[in-house]
Structures are given as C-alpha cells and as structure tokens.
Length: 182
Image 1 (cartoon, one colour):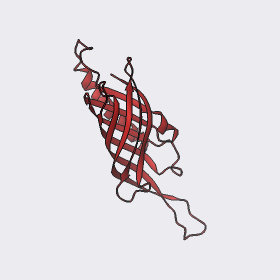
Image 2 (spheres, rainbow, N blue to C red):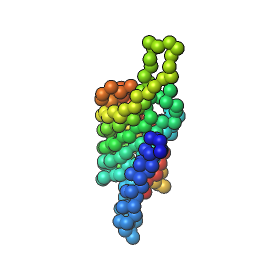
Image 3 (cartoon, rainbow, N blue to C red):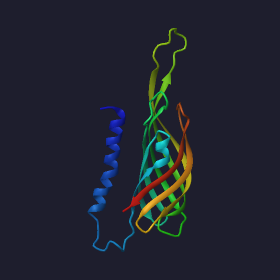
C-alpha cells in the first residue's frame, strides 16, 4: 500500500471509532442532551490542493477537541507537504452551545517529501526526494455558526511553525468549512 492510502485508511478508523462509542450511549430522550460530535469539510483548502476533513468532539458549551486531516491532491513536484494531521483544542465565546467566536491551539504533524536537487552533475539526473515527518505548534481564530437543522458553517485563519529541517517551515490554517452536528 502507498503512504497516502495508509494514512486515509488510518484516518477513517480514527474518525469512525468514536461513532461506535457514541451510538451505544444514546438515551431515549434525544432532545435533552446537546449534540456533541461534528464532522466538517474544509472547502477552501481543497481549492489549494490540500483537502481537509475535520472531526470535533464538544466537551462542554465552550470547549472542544478535534482532529483535522489533510492529504495532498497535488503532484509532489508542486507541493512538498503530502499530508497534515492537526489535533486541536478550541475555546468558544458565543452564547449558543459551542458556537460563535473561538480561539484554537493546535499541534501539526506534517508528512513531507522534499526535493533534493543535484546541480553539480550535467546532464541533471532525475530529482530525488527525501521524506520526513515534522511537528510544530500553532494557533487560529475564527467563527462558527449553527442553524436549527444542526448544519455547521465556520471560517477560521491561523498558522503554525514546524520544528526541524522542514521544507515549508510552517503550515497555514485557513478555512471555510461546512458540516453537521450529531
């Protein structure tokens, strides 16, 4: 199996296992408890060649833990980052349950393939790539809105710094997301 395929399979397992745990703890009175799980798709990052899927578990009315997973859709000659995994914590300041203005702290794990050019040889040999995993810390701010049908829309902006000898040196956290809460 190729590396991106393994990452997608692992990511889906991580995202679907909490659903099994939640489905076994459902009460008959569904309206009394707020919905605490969210799944969103980042529409903007898909346009940039790094589609992103978000899962968030709401801890209480003003905080939540989440995981964002991005896998590169572009060719490795155009983009060094092949995948990005971002666990995050959010604090909400809105009047409704886990919505409104928020701040986010995140930790990024970037899977990169860096080009290694050999300029001393003529004719130039094919480009070789060095693979690496880099980690870093970042933050973001944004706004999340929920309608009566539990549809979620959010906009956020932020970034982070990768430690080590990363080709990119950091990651941009920008998004326009749509999803749902259950």
